[in-house]
Length: 375
Image (cartoon, rainbow, N blue to C red):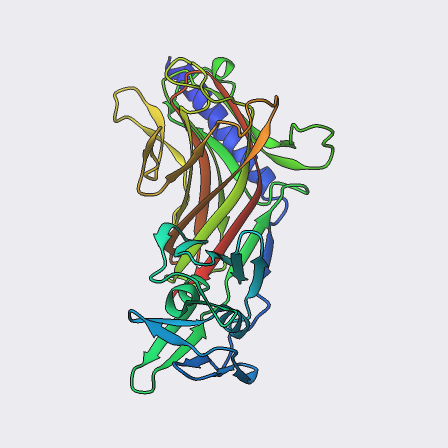
């Protein structure tokens, strides 16, 4: 048994090491914001039809005002002053603002808001229309676009200053693994490779007529009432000890229908997809806490449908349309705030935490990471 345990442990370590070597072959794409930090803050004054931004002074069609202690400013002037892109949807009365990798979605006559780092929250005042111009709560919307707001009560003046530019990374895997690596945990150290069927690699996405679009594939059979399969990526070159707002979006390709039956749970609902940001390298390490040695994660990912401090549930393996056969993409996202380690590093991790005792296969593609410096 000792010889078999060592042999299987060496096989797992070797497979992980191979994944690391292969994933280092091609660097990931990095894009920095093109807009520099304006030297002149955006300025509004309550009751005044004049505003000032990095371009100079402007005349507003309607003046900013205060309602229930909330300063309201015209959204177009706010967007232009912060060098944000504004898109108006006349059919839904929706407004989308984007700046340096941050997105804010608003709706006319509503206090609902969706942002890169928020969900299930409300604005302090509804988006309103004054003289044909849309007004929004200045501080709340500016903050969601990465800007800080100060209030001069004596002059009733609002000053909005943009923060440092966000750093964005986009990984499509069409040319390589872009520095990502894959591995497995929550299985015995002396597991039998023949029955666990663990596989990780860069493969063509299994969609109709696809010959060019690649993704990261993870495959494994849950034989021990538990299995964690994951990919991780180190992002370096950051400022050591600095706090960052981090966001992640990606597509998960799954072929599992909802409402199915399975041992230990359904193959779709019982496999939780989790994501997280940490400042130490996630790794499967040997643990003897349960009497029998197992590979367990060195971070707090929770277990199956339970979240941990380092990883949160962002979805499951259920495909969006049960009427269609084959693998389908599901959009998922995650956001967190954390501090880079003393080497200026942050790690991204995405994985499946399975309670379904059967075979799970999925693909990951179009991974986007945005880091916004804080302070």
